[in-house]
Amino acid sequence: MTGLVPAFVLMIGGLVPGLVLVSRGDAVARLIGLQLLSCVAVLVLLLLAQGFGQSQYLIVPLVLVVLAFAGTLVFTRLLGRRP
Image 1: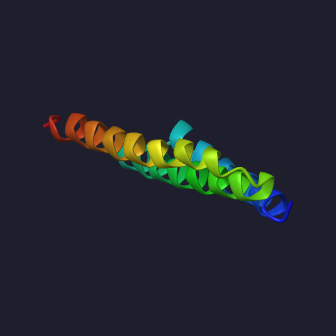
Image 2: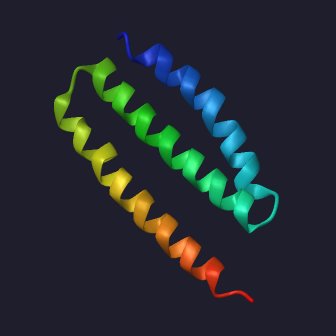
């Protein structure tokens, strides 16, 4: 249960600014928001796995790290094609 309270605090404190960045601003601000949201999501999932005491839940944040990195690469490649 020790990881549940920090996970809730991190969700509120990290997801709200990330959603604001993703929904507004230029392309670079949206990329920063994407990175912030992916980092917060991984940390929240790790804290929830620790809080519930289920080590098999750790595979989800590990896969999310790889997918977030690939998503960032795709996003920057699409950004780079603009003149």
